[in-house]
Image 1 (cartoon, rainbow, N blue to C red):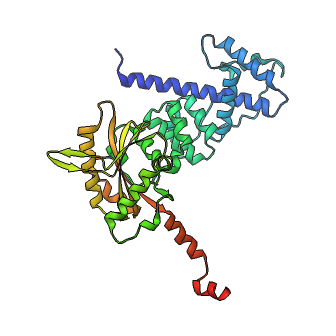
Image 2: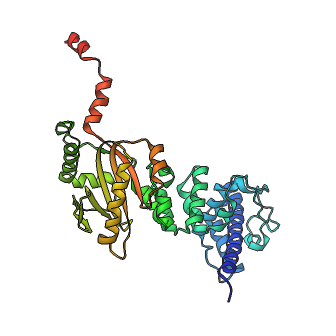
Length: 359
């Protein structure tokens, strides 16, 4: 019985041959449809010819051939040989020259920083999803590597591209990569949370009474009274479970500020509100909540709970540094209220004395 490694190597070789074939076909079609007056009928004719020469193989419909052309045109800088056109000995109207075994061999030339092994390891559908949705080469390389590392399904890859996974890298300080075993779950979590939230519906007149605990309760109350707005701000697929959620272990009671469930992550999300700058002690408190949630509340079919500290300010580099020592998945985000926006506006206005003089 063949080993998993042997099967993997066999699949890799087949995939490379398929990519080279599709690239060569795309190159041939591009050369003859972009520079000559061969229109739609030509691609349909090529499709029929390939089906004759490669009976039993699927994937040579006219729409598929157009995808191959796109694949070649978006990556033509990777081809070492210059294939400009086709000298068809039978005349331009005879497409019998198209046979796959008659196409010139493809030779790729890669720069040192190009992920060639990953490029060759992912399927054509993944490649088309990337080239059709991502235009920047560096971002394409990132998604190629991501698809190879995670073995992501095409639909998951497309979803994460739409969610701008590339742009979310490094935005929210977190330890997800170290604490979440499933790589797809890691990337879902990264795209799920922002690094800053605007809570512009909080009643700022009740804040800043120099009572830290009271201010945090005001913020919590504002969120509860506007939980729909908060969920829309926080992200998609969140369901509100409760605030000051009662937890108990060995007779010790704990009350996390906000508890949600996220359907896409299939995980409880515990949010701790802090009025003021980030402190390392908050991580220990949140880790304790997550431990109890996983032991006492989480269902068997759910993923481990995730914690988010929502505070007034945070040094991202410092947070990234200290959060790695914790074994529960956590992130630290900041928030702004309408009062913060007012302060920004005040800075744009002239001093009060100048306004009084004008009046």
